[in-house]
Length: 230
Image (cartoon, rainbow, N blue to C red):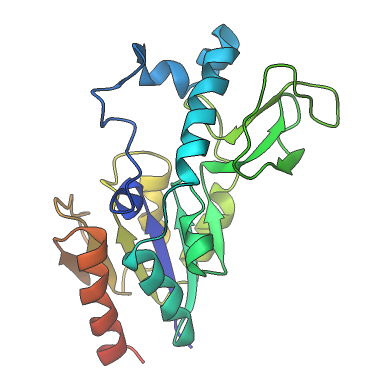
């Protein structure tokens, strides 16, 4: 069974109705996005950060996986599929995918402000100022912010090195270190890039570009994979 590694970004969930950071002009209630997505913002005003992520978590409860998520889950019948996502939503899980690595954390989890390994499931509930982790520190969103390390990156690189096929969906390949993940895939394997405005990586002789949004592009990709790689 061939191993497929799929890197997904914001465009993967956009067709489910999840807005990206930049959809509202880079502002959230007059706060620059960087202010609510950086470790510096947490140190400056944690209550604003909690409100921002509480709002996103509540909104997540009302959206559902799209057909693209379902196609990726369905491919597990024929391939060994590993999903590395930059998204903090739980739509891959709800669609039925079983092997998922969240590079940037998960909205449905919270963690200690001091110990990044002390993580608890909170579902879609809000985090209030004063809510404590088991170690007594303030609970914070389990999200990797600008200025923080990406602890799952090493594992993602290991998965990518083992891939027989790599797929990139809904990401501009502009956010590092995730964008550099494709460099760890063997240069001989097929690389499928699904994005309406793809920024094609250089020096990839086995590159296949599908210039479509996630759902439409994955519909095409599913046929290609089933017809050519089983």
